[in-house]
Length: 516
Image (cartoon, rainbow, N blue to C red; front, top):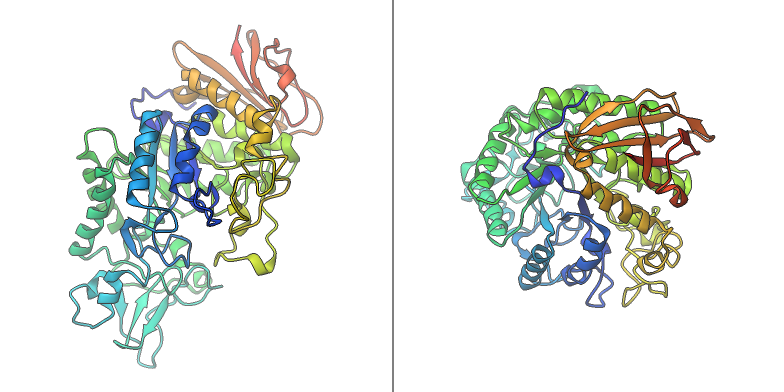
């Protein structure tokens, strides 16, 4: 059983809501979402009941990887607005009680960044060692067999003709890897953190943060792994030293700043090490869950593994079922709106910090993006479709946005669902409000309850509060025996709410029970 944790850290109690700014809300008429668009909808997010925002990159960038190729860490790209717009967003969010974390991209820059332009100008550049360079092999071959992402197994090296050396890039050739072994580079990257911390951000989501350290030998991987992007394999011990320094920097601010890391290693045991001994990452994303099917046994195994490993490491779990890199949970799980609601109970009923992706509260699916409209080098356009705010076209955007909408944008818009008490939007609000009111749900212990193989059921509890969560993966009605009397607090079936629970679970239903 996962024991209750007496937590004072806000990020352990919060529900995070991820905003992909290009697709959230456009205030300028450019067809691309922006910072003022986010500020305009803060009241909606407070009404929804989330506690914190994670805003994906809005830094100056040539946008070859849509903001994850940063050309200036301390400037807002004009596409998204200005630093004054960001300051206003932070001020308004904090006034409404919302925390804000922003993406930080520490493992690579854009090839347009001033640092890289200087580094590639000469082998004698003072910033040459801020990136990873190696001479060609005897026959001009690349330094090792590492593969880059977005390249179908292509090399993670590009020859710079001007200086005659290869540079390392774990992603696009226009995203050269930074060399964190260089102390001046580390100091410069620490300064980028301070820049935003001093502007009031509450923390960071660190992009592929496990990729900042590299084994000094840059040894080739076994042949069976050579087509796998190296960013999914890189796991160098020295990274933990770098993370401890970052944790110390964050701790120098008195008001609980934090960092959640994208540790994309797909192994809970390896991911857990990036918490250190409470002196590295505050949180790390638990990515095996994002690949799971809608299957009770698979989820039970993942939950058991996650809790077992993280308890040994004294680390707090995270849960995520979709984001800007993966298909939306409604598309991936299938099963329509009922299953989408049940997945929300799964996400928000577990012990740990949940991260919601914008649009899940509307029950959105991936957009069907025609070939001629696709722009992302990683093929992720479908899950990045814009949020429909209004019923009438173009659905709250001043012009058609940069990507097509997901299916049924009028029916699934915020405006349409806000007026329908039985909508997915209102269901999320009821679930989020109830979670906030229940200490058992945001800090309580976790204990499995006996069920058949088609159900998952667990008890959450503190000394003064208790909740039971039950999720049906079945296509027919099931039953469960519970000790004690319970009332349905939240249900995917609205008429059930407020009723006495009699042990029957309808197909694809999910409920939160409270004692009576």
